[in-house]
Image 1 (tube, helix red, strand yellow):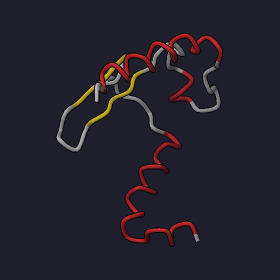
Image 2 (cartoon, helix red, strand yellow):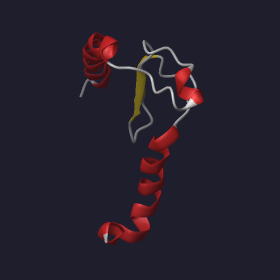
Image 3 (cartoon, rainbow, N blue to C red):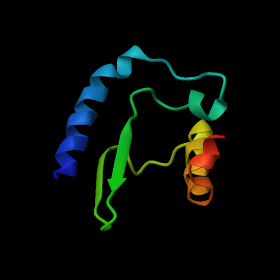
Length: 83
């Protein structure tokens, strides 16, 4: 599978959408970030890394940390995590 081509395609599509949104001003760490920044990366289980845009630029994760926490707990609780 050509992961880089997939990321490049998604990146181009997202770039056209960037002018549509606004930056959250109620979170100081987010308010200071340019709304034109976008990046993403994928690492395969084989260790291959693919990236586009500003994928290597540090950023404030805010509420996405909840997704990381969920993925850490899922192996221990399985489907019971939803109960």
